[in-house]
Length: 117
Image 1 (cartoon, helix red, strand yellow):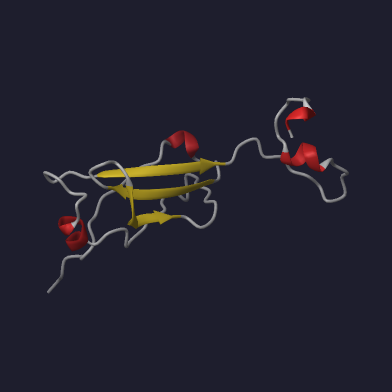
Image 2 (cartoon, rainbow, N blue to C red; image 1 turned 45 degrees about the horizontal axis):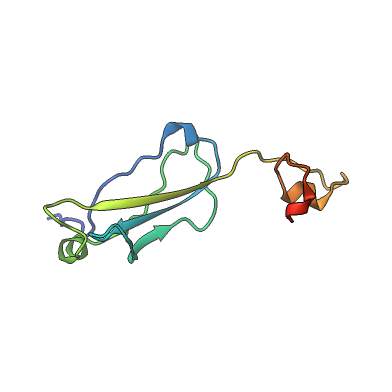
């Protein structure tokens, strides 16, 4: 005898061009006004790297089927999910022995105008 999972099952895919880019992401179920519902929001706690060998990250307990059905988020068997993605780019490797200017390290823009600090 098998029992059905109490969790709703759905997949959200991240575009292939983000593969190999370290990312953090957050999925939030939205209410009917389009606002995230904190109770049904889940985020990664660290940056994740994906590759052709590591293609999946899941939140197994994102929302229980019963909770989704009873929520104000489900209307006409439809719901909305927001996905916030933070991607790292333009990473620089800095050797411990190299001298570097803290301002250059933390200010990764090419603007030499220091008056905006």
